[in-house]
Length: 262
Image (cartoon, rainbow, N blue to C red; front, side, top):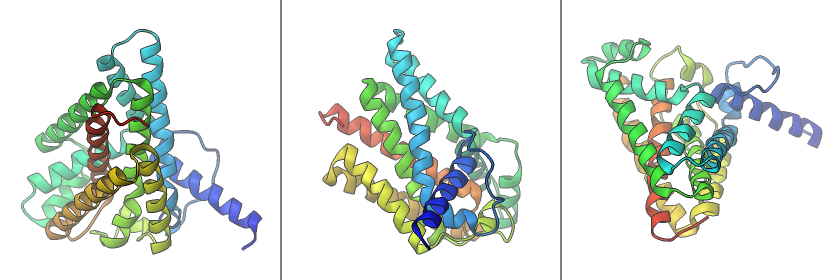
């Protein structure tokens, strides 16, 4: 593969991930075939950076017109949800409903297919939205909030290919099964991009803490998913992204409150 072909492949992979993760216009792309998403998954952190930038810009504009950190944080979160089409929030809610409400594997999977939200899903959404809002409001300063949003969205998505590689699909159909397992190469590149973002904001020692948190969250959710439904689904991946995102945001709030600045 020459440099021109490599450049085209990189651009295509980024466009695939951005089109799947957000509602941002990326133009017409080659139809996505089985395996294309798994191959392109290394670019998920880049899609996360775009989402984080949207949230950071919204927070900065809100502060510039005189809003306090509380309302500004709500608007920043609303912008990230709008840009992603609430894709991962939907996965979190479906996962909470399925794993919490079903008795058998079949019931859990059926609940997760249902587009309606239940009590478990509503509670999970409210709790994580409240945690994200409180973390951003506690950070306060626009530049620091932007850094927290960027690194949390990028790092949470950077962990998804490794999760896809390690945890088998629970179904033979559905988005996750169609995407296929991410290759070890895609998982490694995505992880490196995520670690680069973490180190640039937190520094090496605290980035290691963030990686350990993401790893622990992935191991717990992966084991839970395998035991209850036999593996991961698109909803499980969305839930993992949300858990990783809030873990990094809370870390940022704690570290920035103790004097660390990007």
